[in-house]
Length: 400
Ligand code: IVH
Figure 1 (cartoon, helix red, strand yellow):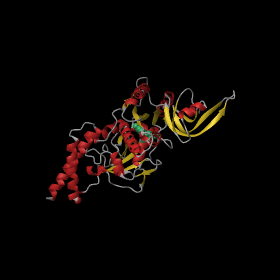
Figure 2 (cartoon, rainbow, N blue to C red):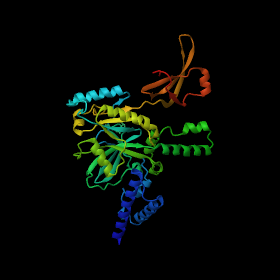
Figure 3 (cartoon, helix red, strand yellow):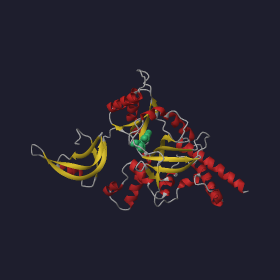
Figure 4 (cartoon, rainbow, N blue to C red):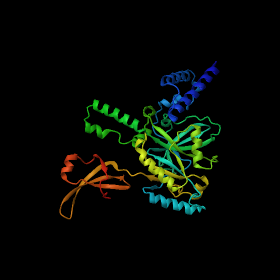
């Protein structure tokens, strides 16, 4: 008898995993939410009646309910490095020259002897997912790059992340890394909900504005650090995966690894391209600079990676980042920061200009610490005060 329950439980888990995949990874649901919920409820009931079949990776575990008092610190198996940044296409030419020199490839105009993979640079929080015997066993944040926090319970609530894998060619042990992000629509929904709550509590518009979530990335980061995974489950975090790590992986190129990860059920961006020349790279950059506003999530640039693993190895690493990859950041034309102080500058003509001293913020490729407030009337008009969040915009030149 018990064997029948076991089979039914297994069948429901498999069906629910498939439907999760179709809904959250492929965005092509096959059944209604109502039918899904019915199956989920049946599984919850069966698991309750038969605790001997408990599985911490069952789809029932995605609803949260786990409270982590203090996240365990875990050492990364592979250091979580960062990427070198560039802000101009000239700097990319320099990067490409260095690659060419190190690889010493025999190249001509049509065949440089190496390829780049162009990816979007998702503006979220880095995560490493560890899989053992086809099960998600740990999810670790970047931390200081050497060790991070174990946020597995929170990560399990993200529906597009598979908790179990089924393909026969999945390695016994591997790590996959990616970026946790909050879709813009969900960010807006959370802010609308918070604004309503605060208004109900009697806050005025200005007070509400001060308390709203500032941007999707900070909100994603704050959500991942929640102790109660039930709260995480109510916020629709998502995750794009962009790198596979492990011993003896059967891939020769980064693009192959992404194709395999996609086949295994991970959410891998469809906007990744292999580029055979810098011209193709520049096309990619320009295309997504146009498209970025229409994407349902934030990107802050693109990432270039040498496709061949052998060539990656040859190029190696600096202390902080790989020499085979670089990011190109789009210029922010406006950025939000905190006004720390207002000082007054006396010009050559004796005119006094108020200057906003800001919490340093990147704007159009420059770290901005000060901005002109032009004159006292403008301060009154804007109503700016110390401690306010201010949006700085690039007008003419930037005062560094
Ligand atoms: S690859 C060794 N690819 O940007 C470097 N990173 O400073 C491996 N990021 O920590 C990172 N999109 O959080 C890579 N397509 C992408 C990315 C990406 C966003 C983030 C990631 C990383 C940071 C690099």
